Image 1 (cartoon, rainbow, N blue to C red):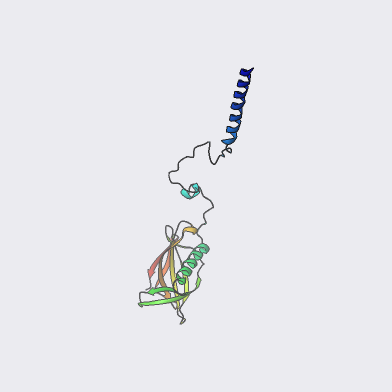
Image 2 (tube, rainbow, N blue to C red; image 1 turned 120 degrees about the horizontal axis):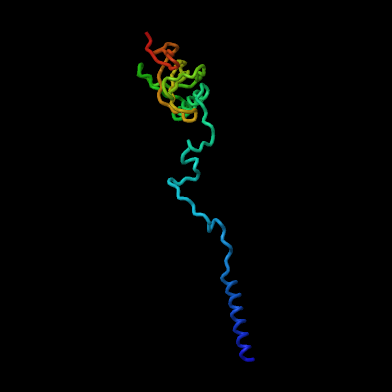
Length: 180
């Protein structure tokens, strides 16, 4: 009987230790974030989203076409951004008269979409000086879509209605020629 008691106590101790040990060393169940079952593929150029890595492969919205309205919007945005840098005036150098002009935008002409070469467009914009002089500047923008139009060049077309050059259209492309 003593042997039976000893075995019983030994089994009871083993059972008690195993129960106590499992409680003592128990942990919460791992989540998939802590221990993912699938390995993540290593990206060549890590980004938060694949759409940012190659936008043309994963377009998020339809690109806006260049129209006379979107060209005018881009020109107005450019002129306004430049004017903010100069106390509200758009500053332009008249190379012929060797004079810096401080101009306020009156309007961007939207009568036509004038293309002069592949992805290059222009529109006339009317400006006034504080002393009432009127200038017509041709502002050139380049881009494949309305959202990527960027400024390229400005040319003084007219001062107080007197042209310094004229435009003519040839096969849908506008070309410049000097005033005769």
